[in-house]
Image 1 (cartoon, rainbow, N blue to C red):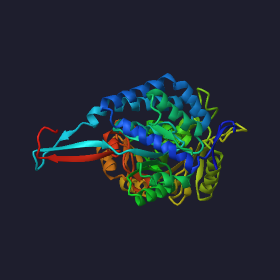
Image 2 (image 1 turned 180 degrees about the horizontal axis):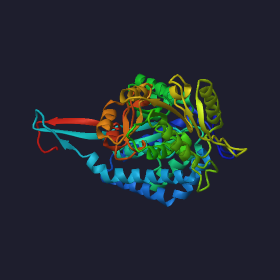
Image 3 (image 1 turned 90 degrees about the vertical axis):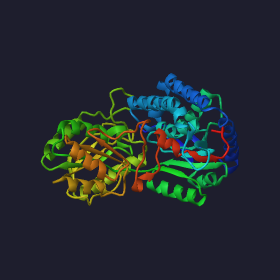
Image 4 (image 1 turned 60 degrees about the vertical axis):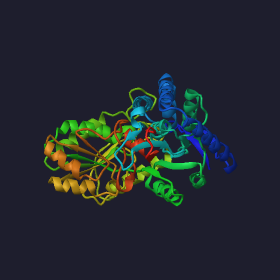
Length: 459
């Protein structure tokens, strides 16, 4: 096995990287360990300055980074630029909030002086996916470094160039080589890294299968882990919703990143009174999205990131039709090369369809109708996942009902689910546990230490 980078638009092999041997892993871990010892001695203000330097580097090199991302995993170029810009925003946000988030706080207690401080843990192992190859890594690494931790990165095997570039960004912008070290390792080798005493915690974004495996390894080593896994987000359209606005947003919510997003809307639950109108507007909106060369400025949907993932979509669609799915719209792919897959919208007869039961990682949109709010809630919650949810209604009372009862980590009213550095991000059920982003995410990466003393003056 090796890390193989293939341009999904042209099928050209861009780069190949051999796996590290166990002996080659050791000096990288040690470098990260020594860097962490130095990093934790820096003041919070100095660490905030490091994040500002990283943000500046990202913006200075935005176009090159966006082209790299698009060439390696097929994201439309305008979305790649937005991802790099979002990473820069993330750096600046934590730089601005760092001293507030990590401030020592005095609390009431039995002794004369009682306070809570947040200390770094050490090395964080980040196991990251390909679909947002910059953002997912930065989402973990930026608050980790702010807290005084360093990061070992095990990235997805189809984005090796991006993994190396991210390591370079942290090294060149900070002048410190050990803040983030990339590891080209196999799934088998992850166990050894987790068991290393210098590694103190794990953060994984990926599949349920990967999450279970890593969570088990972390549990055996008694190390904390944050898991952000799959999603099958419901998109509920109530009878009192702005139907056209809901449908236009639904097109973006389903097809963002070519449908390859854990928080993409994947199950459309539409009130029977407005179903036909919504379906009509939805088809019109999706038809306007251009499938094409991801480096083209007017492309909305690029290729699927890998051939096996595109082929899986083809098979899932065939099965979904066999199980009663009625195609309302099927786009065309006009390319002979590349792993392209055009959007498809279907009306389902029941929930007993693979397109409803499984997380479909591509632009396939299944629709079901419902009669009342309780039925919509049952349909929405009838899934093993619990990441995000979308609700469209003009009634605050109805929106409140859904926001309180949906089994999800994020609920967005009259919008589509998206991550924001200022707000906690994560799910429930098989979508994982723990939170990323905001102060809640930072708290996952620190030792929240209680100090009580009869001596005064140490606070």
